[in-house]
Every structure is written in structure tokens, then in C-alpha cells.
Image (cartoon, rainbow, N blue to C red; front, top):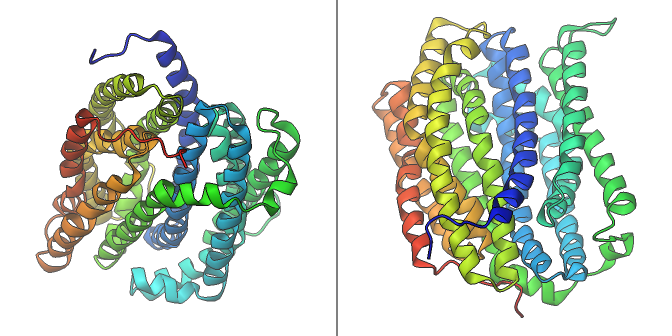
Length: 451
């Protein structure tokens, strides 16, 4: 079996999915970067408040991605069989579960914002500003749940251009309202952190309305109807419990682990939180390409497995592994190139700037391992149906290695910020090696659509 597939159609299909998904990621990243930079002019408290409030939203977002990921594996494999009826029933179940999750998080964010923020930090000024931000943000949880799950179904069948157009437009809306509401332009009051939250909510509501119109009135391949929302297919749900639920469990543990990492950094002070937020912008700019390839790899692998093409799935997986090495190496170089110009945009203290430089240097060292592990866990192996195995890979090393090691490094030994960051991401190194062996074993190819 060739290490590199010679199927030109695979590369065309991969780029056809990966490029639009990458652009969507760049748009999403640009929103976060603009929020960071605009709030950065207001100092560490504003950056930290928004960053920690967004950690709660990030927890919900990762759970939602886990839900999407599980059903997307099923939907992409059903698409390989050209079974659109089962895809529609998957989407209906997914949307109902997502909206219930969104309602729960809306209530928590609206009613208990200070209690939530106090988990991440003890600094009163950060909690007060962050609570105001989170209370406003609570409006968008339901909207995000609907939008994300609807667009995941479109991606599962290869329709990635429509979500890109919607998210790009939402980015422009967010940009305009950020400028107007944060700084008080065109007669509006300067709302600071609250303005950033309101702008984000407006953009998310726009995305949700567009998703509603597209799935019911525009998308013709699925022919999705409102009546599907009343269906609960036990056969589909059993398939989800068999394989897809593991994706949600994996991402839930991952979300909890990432929250624990944020708590560790939050208790190291506002400077560390702000520095990590600044560094994360650069990291996202470099990892977004891998996210596009991961989602493209997951969808195409699912199509191949669903169609019964085991050898094709194996060959594509090895090709994607080699591509991820190249993407990781290029990303590490780009991180160093962007370091100085991006950090110069922030108005922060010397200590925060020093922390940010140290973290960015550590990101460069870890990026290739993160890229390889991410493409295999969120792309090839997930699309191939190896969802139960990935619980240990995605969350096991995070909880057993990174969290205790990071806590010791940051809260007990008080090591430099860059070294603390490497400890917090130590799982990426181990995971990338372990999943590479799993790929070559071939044990990850499983058709989850079978009864």
C-alpha cells in the first residue's frame, strides 16, 4: 500500500473542504483577535475579563463540537451510502439535544456569572467586568447551538461554502459593532467590555437566522423539513450511543481539562491570563490550517468508510499524516514571524509582554506535535469511527499528565511562563506519537452506521 495516495480526486476534494473550513477558522480567529486588540487598548483587566468569560463559552462550544462531531461521523458515513433520510434524522436529534444544552448554559450564564468567574480568578476587578460580559453573552448560547449543528450537517455532506459566506458576513458585522460599541462611535456610548459582548451577540444571532433559512429553504441535497424535529429515531440514537456519544464524552473531558488549565493560569494572575490570551491569537492563526485539513480528513474518511472502501481510507489517512508534519513545521516558523508585530498592537505592562513572548516561544516548540495529534484525533481516526479509543487519547493524557504537571509548575514551583505552558501542553507530545501508531495499525476503521 502506498504511503502517499495518488488519487488526484482526493486532493481536489480535500482542498474543496479544507480551504473553506480554514477560511471559516480564519474568520472566527479574526473575531477573537479584534476583540483582544480592541480591548487590549483598555488594559489587562479588560482583556482578562473577556478572556475568562469566554472560557465558559468555550466550555459550551467544545461540548457542542463534541455533539456535532459524533453526529458528523454518522452523517458523513451515511452520505457515503447516499442515505439522506438517515442524515436528516441525525440532524433533528442533534439540534434538539444542542438546544437543550444551550438553554442550560444560558440560565447559568445569566443567573450566576460572578460565581462562574470566581472559579477562574480571585481578582475582584476581573470578576466584575467579566460577569457583565458573560451576562450579555448568555443571549447567544441557543443561537450558537442552532447555527453550529446546522452547519455541521452541511459540512458532513461536503457543503462548506455556504457556512463560509455566512460566517464572513457575521465577522464584518462583529467588526463594525465592536468599533462602534467599545469606543463609542457615531453617537453611541463607549461601553468597553460590554460593547464587545453586545457585538458578539449580534453577530451570533445573525448566523443563527441564516442557518435557519438555509436548512429549511435553500439546501436541496438534504430536503430537510420542520417535521423532522418531531422525530426521535431509536435506531439512529443507538448508533450514536455506540460510537458518536464517545465523541461528546471525549470533548466533554477535553473541555473540562481546558477549563482546568485556564483555572491554573487564572490563579497565576491577570498578567498570565492576558499574556495567554494574546499568545492564543497567534497560535490560532497557525493552527487554523490544520483544523481545515482535520475536518476535511474526517469527512472524506467517513465517506470512504461508509462506502466500504477500507484501503482508500487507510491510504488517505497516511497521506494526511504526512501533510500534518509539513503544516506543523510551517506553522512554527510563522509563529515566530508574527510574534513581534502582533504583540506590538497591545497596550500592556512589560511583565505581561514578557510572559506572552515566553508562551509564544513554547507554542513554536509544541506546534508540530499539536498539529499531528489534532489531525489524527479530530480528523482521520474520528472520521474512521474510532471514537471510543479517542477518549483516552484526547482526554486521558490531558488529565493524567498535563493538568497535574501544569499545576505543579505554575502554582507550586512558580516556573517561568514558557515552561509552565509546555507542562500544560505536555499531553500533545505523547498523544501525537500514540495516535501515529494507532493509524498504522488499521484498527481505527469502523462503520458506525451498521445496526
